[in-house]
Amino acid sequence: MAYLILGNSAAGIAAAERIRQIDKNNSITILSDEPHAAYSRCLTSYYLGGQVTEQDMYLRANNFYQAMGISFQPNQKAAAVNPDKKQVVTNQDNIYSYDKLLIATGASANRPSLPGIESDGVFSLRTMDDAKAIEVACQSGRQAVVLGGGLVSLKVAAALNQRGMNVTVLVGSNRVMSQNLGDTAAALVEEQLAHIGITVKKGTRPVSIESDADGTVTGVKLRNGDVYQADLVIVGKGVRPNSSFLKETGLVNGGGEPLKVNRRQETALQNIYAAGDVALTYNILDENYSYSAIWPNALEQGGVAGTNMAGLTREYPGSIPMNSASFGGVPVIAAGITQPRAEGYTLIEEKDAKGNYRMLVLADGRLVGFTLFGDTSRAGLYTGIIKSRKQFPSDQALWQKPRNYLSLAGISTYQ
Image 1: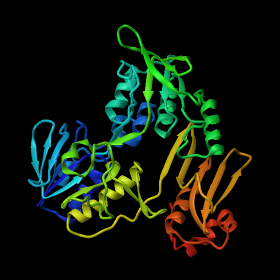
Image 2 (image 1 turned 180 degrees about the vertical axis):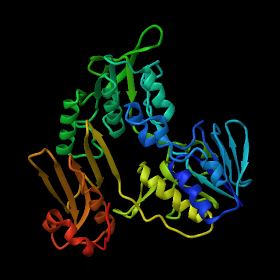
Image 3 (image 1 turned 90 degrees about the vertical axis):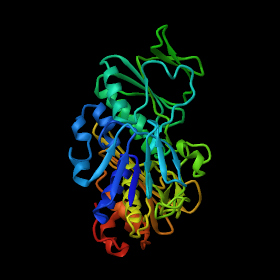
Image 4 (image 1 turned 60 degrees about the vertical axis):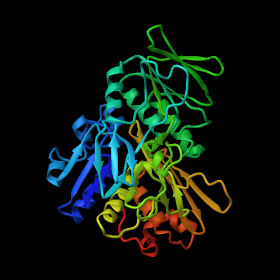
């Protein structure tokens, strides 16, 4: 039995560890398109902001692969999969055979087709090498422009701000984190960004990235003709699953789309599994599959895939969308359904004298989402209640004393 794992991040490492727990002897090979041992992509913005070191980013000890009996193959990017021959061909023209294959290739930063986007000084932040390249380009007192108001964009903006750069965030919508936060929470985040010195411009439409004769970025031009000076530009426009190498297998149509799996993380092809940011996630709220590229989902899906690859049976229990960040030491967390667009939902909101904000979203007596700004101490409690899918006797009971109803919800512990 030969296990082959494409991807060396959360899902791939979790799968390898689970396989080795069950199968002590058969070979496990991990291919990575990067030169580094497994590290946390979640920490790239914190590395850029100087809050963690490179060593802090690594997930396992230096001897991890050797101790686990794993053959780690860096700089081997999967170029094609041949399911009939059970082989993977890499960009180095190397061929790896498998009996069980896990596709955990993650996702890459989505870069829009703007004129000038290939100019020197224009970056996306997805990998450790991205963070190191941005770090070299950072200069205190100079101008940085961040395109996009999503979570990653704002975390990068905060990191550049910590490095002393003058940061402007250009947002296309009418608020930051528009996919995660409602108006009130978004306004609080915007106030906090302004407090730490980050400028946010909403309703903007970049049309080009300007550069000098040497091809070095000088600014970002908007549809209305305004130009924002920039010595550094960060593009944060979401991610695309790394699936284009699978076009010949029939698992995807054109690439850049997530893989469909069942709850055992199996694809439509026998002995081929998928997990993490390249796969669709089973969502317990709507009991359907959706794309949610977050670290905890990848870890759990990888463990489920590894269990099934090794011959045991386990189903992915499902997840809820969740995003969290901290700006100037003030945290914000949004999970589940935070912006209901249909009837039948109840929203309960509160903002206290200290500036903390809390919103719960309920449907049919169940907690289905929450947003916390400032005081996030109940995040684990609320997450557990959502996953329990149990009904509560009243909205106010859940709002005022949720811990009193843990036994009713079938929750014995919470984080």
